[in-house]
Image (cartoon, rainbow, N blue to C red; front, side):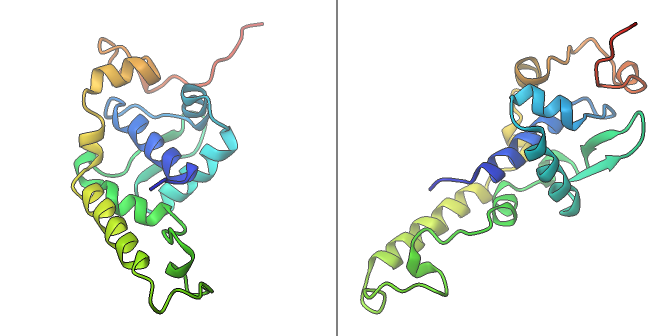
Amino acid sequence: MKLTQYSDYSLRVLIYLGVNPDDRLSTITEISSSYDISRNHVVKVVHNLGQLGYIETIRGKNGGMRLAMKPEDINVGKLIRKTEANLDIVECFGEDGNCVLTPTCQLRWALDEALTAFLVTLDRYTLADLIKPKKEIQAQIINILPAKSAASQKPKSTTRKTKK
């Protein structure tokens, strides 16, 4: 099985937000920079995650985003089902499949069993499972020092400004 880049980025955004201190807001620029991925891709992912209810976005000068639910309430299997546009791993899985072997082929059933096992395994995990160890992930992707409080982060804009 291979997930699309879209699902991968969705998981990365949630992991990023999941390791943030509770009240700290993150920006699209900050996330795309941390992962070295296209800002435009992150914009699309963030928009969809907001529509799905996984994240809360706040507009304005000091705006940003954060998780809209607890990490333990975000199920990885459900997320993948919502972010993968097509889980048809072979042509015969789709409605428009034209394979001549479809009526007698046993491969379809074996692959269906494998896909089900893949998703059932992901159903056993939550975002909380993916963000352990939290401090190490913070250090790797967002460099949030544990000594910094959420309150000291809150009023500052997360985009860098140069002084003139």
